Length: 31
Image 1 (tube, rainbow, N blue to C red):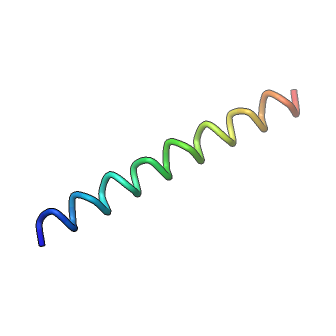
Image 2 (image 1 turned 30 degrees about the vertical axis):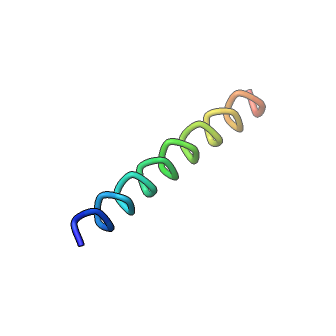
């Protein structure tokens, strides 16, 4: 149970990092 929770935690963390990086690139392109 704890392994599944840590897996989803790392997965959501990776998604947040990717989204932040993607929107950062969009802002650079807009400027």
